[in-house]
Length: 62
Image 1 (cartoon, helix red, strand yellow):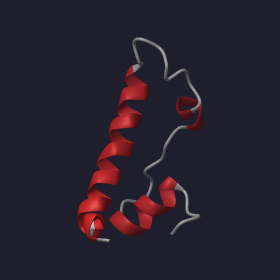
Image 2 (image 1 turned 45 degrees about the vertical axis):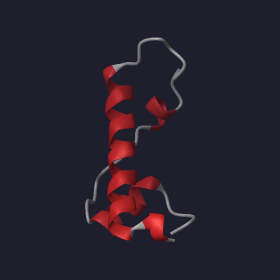
Image 3 (image 1 turned 45 degrees about the horizontal axis):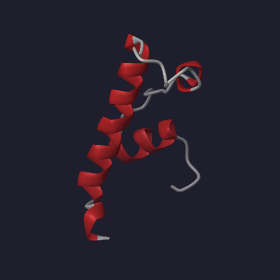
């Protein structure tokens, strides 16, 4: 799944179709002192998915 998008990985590995990262939010100013609610939501989603995939696949053993 190395070349898959975030959306494809979430769909296949977590069986959660329709989860999307907004490219406009991804390209926004992340160095701002105060992030927008959308930026915080997107960062939280990204971290949650990475954590869940790590736990499911026990990547620390690998």
